[in-house]
Length: 375
Ligand code: COI
Image: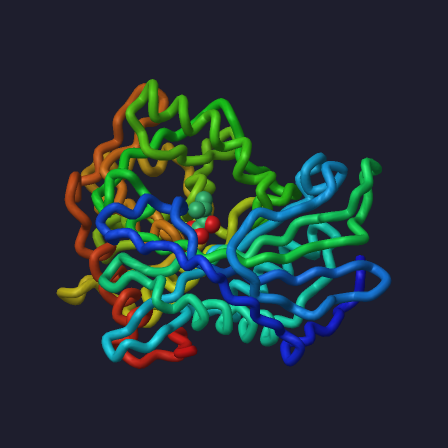
């Protein structure tokens, strides 16, 4: 795969739109349907490396119909957000981790690597350019979607010789139609999202497209917002299509509670930045509010254990984490004809609420924290 090239941030050119779009009332925002006025373009080819970056008015792309991204899914993306803080400043949340993950996904697809600091600088310039598109308020932000595609016009299955990274911005509120309310999940025992040795860890479109049809079925036939993906004979929990998943379980010996999420070592789960942040916060807290000891585990979790904990009244909370979903409480999981009800029901559980509060305090700059980067 191609070696590390240099992005020429100093050669950035900016062409501003002459037809700025009207901004929508934030209460009417539907996730991912509205886009800001500008976008960033970065083009690479195997002979010349990276060309000078450009910020241009938001608009359609023109690529060859033979581009291998359109045939073989040679494509990956990132999800980040820009937040408006109380002083009117603009902040990103752990953008370094997004860029590391982008490089990991790009490497898996034989795309060139990017210089992470330069990418953050270019994305920051784009966000500042369209900063008046950032909706204010908890749960509202400007979603940033860096996307890398092969533009190589070649029908052979090969490493791309031409790649484009583009970044678009979208003002967003809640990811789910339900708003910030708890969702129901359908634990699918027939179809698989990813497997050990596969590429579930990569943020490649190829991991997401196959989830759409099962997701529609889960909604239509089971009234569930998303699929909870499982793997293996024991129905080990993996993740939800658009978020990682956490379970809070009272320990069998009664000595405190355990916050469990599946581990990353099999490479079948996306390493979410919100997932990592929740784990780091929980490891720092070490106890629930009220002093109950909190153990934090990245370990395999079979659905049988979830059912058992639920039957014994030890399943306390379930919630998803993701950039788009933030902290998304789960009301119930439908699994093999059962409905596992989460006691927090249609409200957010106390631990999920605490994570929501701690993360949004950092993201919106209400507390100073190294994870929040003012741009
Ligand atoms: C994100 O949370 O940023 C994602 O990329 C998930 C996507 C399905 C919206």
